[in-house]
Image 1: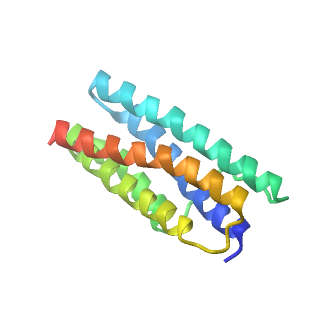
Image 2: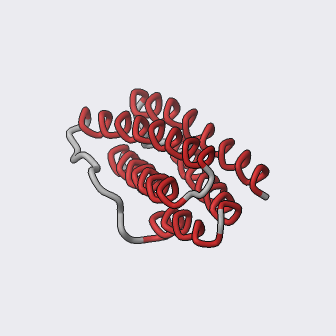
Length: 144
């Protein structure tokens, strides 16, 4: 897989999570959870911007919308839908989505197709993704 393909896949996935956080924040009951979800949303938007900047550097087309297909989109849509069953169910979905996303970034870092600059960008984004995964674990414990 080319570096641009890897970056596009990661950006698609991260963009889907932005939309998942946006919908989840809209449906959350707890003001504290709503605020925490919005903070993660803003950090994830920054990650998407970083990835898009690297795609643009390589001459690729920017990701400006979610994938609308596949398990990534469905995983993050289920986050928002879970709020219909309460904050506890939603926290569990956030945790699952973040685990999935972290796995995708980890897999990308093991890919030999990334040039040094792209690898550095993915590594930097992986740090935010890891924070998101820790956030998912924390809210799952809090609302469990």
